[in-house]
Length: 140
Length: 140
DNA sequence: ATAAAATGCTATCAATTAGTAGTATTTAAC
DNA sequence: GTTAAATACTACTAATTGATAGCATTTTAT
Ligand code: FES
Ligand code: FES
Image 1 (tube, chains in turn brown, orange, purple, cyan):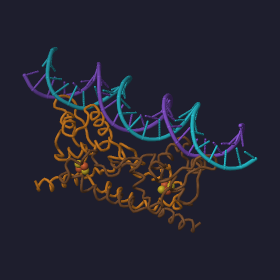
Image 2: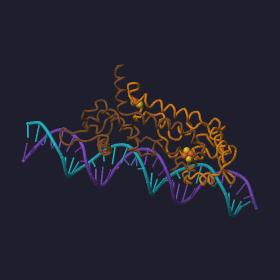
Image 3: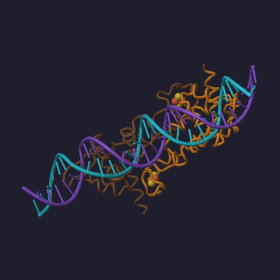
Image 4: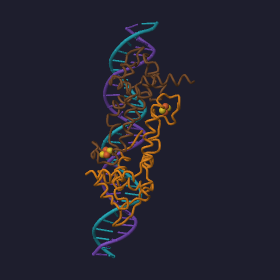
């Protein structure tokens, strides 16, 4: 059950970009608006490009925009791309392969909470975030 | 949403000790049975003593035993003692104080899963682990 | 062409977390 | 009392993760 700071940065930035899903965002704008260290974000953005979430357009007037339909980018994909699949799904005792399986007393207790988290991350797309954003904005 | 390796080690060891809650365990036995590096575990055990979960008995024939009723040691106390309170409860975007509160679109989506995790950790005591252990053992 | 404004890359540094080494202290068996 | 078996302590090392620096490349406006 681990979410690195880098994944959190990714959530900030991609969530921000989802506001206007067709727009082109410069790294400059993104690090300013999301409080992510400039250079660190630049590297993260290239990674996110390589993972296929966004694409980069080079040169003056360049920037980043989504590479795929954001209704099909689920939060869990982002975490797993950055932190690896074990980060969320791994054994609560830190064993590589839940050694004890059913006989481990922690397993069942934890499994339920874990599944809940996995489901939330698996069922929430950036589009859902966007919609949520519209809803909440309408309260302002 | 973070659980350090150290917390996982603590779960292993305290869960193991809960098998026989009145027994005195030597560090030697604990690191052998739970695959935790010797020296690292020794330090962890002194920490767990200082936190008041267990107490140490020095000298030959010494070891560690629970300092409190294990039905009142909840998993979340262990995590919070080791990793700090923000590790589990913190903002999904990594902000110190969930800056946006209700206006942040991630908030509600995540809150539900987070509460589920917190409840699981808050409601599960080492005694529950022990009981679970007895149940599962009876299947063997 | 040239300059400006953007991304791309690689190497390095810093901070945090995990793990080790070595020695001192405590206590009980003999 | 001496030795053996345990914990306690402090300082160090290693690994991982987060952050920076500096230069190269791409593209467009002029
Ligand atoms: S061994 Fe992984 S939860 Fe029990
Ligand atoms: S600011 Fe923390 S979840 Fe939105």
